[in-house]
Amino acid sequence: MNTTAYTQSLQERIVPFTSKDGFECNLINVRGEKPPSKSPVLLAHGAGVRANIFRAPVDTNIVDYLVAHGYDVWLENWRASIDLNHNHWTLDRAAVNDHPEAVKTIVEETGYEEIKAIIHCQGSTSFMMSVVAGLVPQVKTIISNAVSLHPIVPSWSSFKINFAVPAVNFLTDHLNPQWQIDSPSLAAKLISLFVGLTHHECNNSVCKQVSFTYGTGFPALWEHANLNEATHEWLKQEFAYVPLSFFAQMSQCINRGHLISVDNFPNLPKDFIAQPPKTDARIAFFAGQLNRCFLPQSQIETFKYFDSLRPNYHTLHVLDNYSHLDIFMGKNAAQDVFPLMLAELEKTL
Image 1 (cartoon, helix red, strand yellow):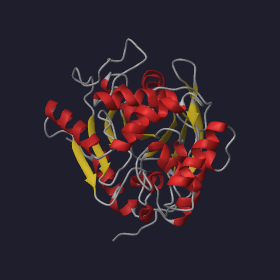
Image 2 (spheres, rainbow, N blue to C red):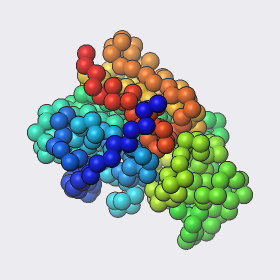
Image 3 (cartoon, rainbow, N blue to C red):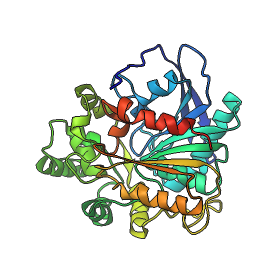
Image 4 (cartoon, rainbow, N blue to C red):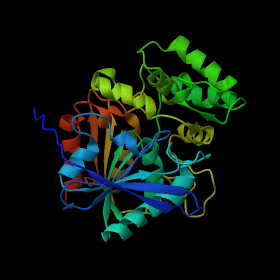
């Protein structure tokens, strides 16, 4: 097994951009000691985290790996980021307002007319909405992890999002895994008590609250065996505020079996599989076989949909022994996962 650690001095700069509706977001551009020799790659994080989620304290994280292979890396903090102002976001608002402006900013900053993207979880669903609607035509190669157009979840998760979340909405308009450390309200105290009584998989309070918030399992977003101790401790600071407005939309999508829009934007379709996607991008779908947040069938179904429209153009990778975020945060991901992603980025047809 190749255990090379791509250690080098990295330089980063924050590039602010204003979304189409005036919301302030930013991009973190990461480069190595030498100027990048390959195209820009945008990385979009999931719900209730931030761009830093791609920079776990492992020997080689995905940012290190891409920079070492010559790519110009751009980490997008879109409106779901815990580093930005709290807001009641939906996938629609990100798809229309955030991702197109992020892509436009990268194109303007780099001079590249075409870029690539690695998108994860709700960064993937919202970005894929932009893609299907034809709002990011500059993006030609996409790696999507965990879920894209077909959110399929375990039965317990379906119950929680359909019944428990509306009940919680009487007490609070958001959830926050940090409540397991500090519970500032009655809702926070009640949820933290419930998590404490039902989750005994580890001694990391945030890890347990994350599993309750986002999936089914002990834990739900990773396999403990795939994380080193430093990452398991580091993730305490990487999860925070997530609005119930997101869960409300996701509930509707899960019940329909695929993504739908809720905000009536004229440039988004109401149903995202009712018409052919307005893109010629090639998409590589990744899923962890052990994912208990979104089941691997989520990506399998979306791959089947795209493959039916353009056979043998897109690809699918279902990874044994991996779950949801450990595909990026895993201590062995640089050997097991990243080479597959690199090959997809560099594939030409």
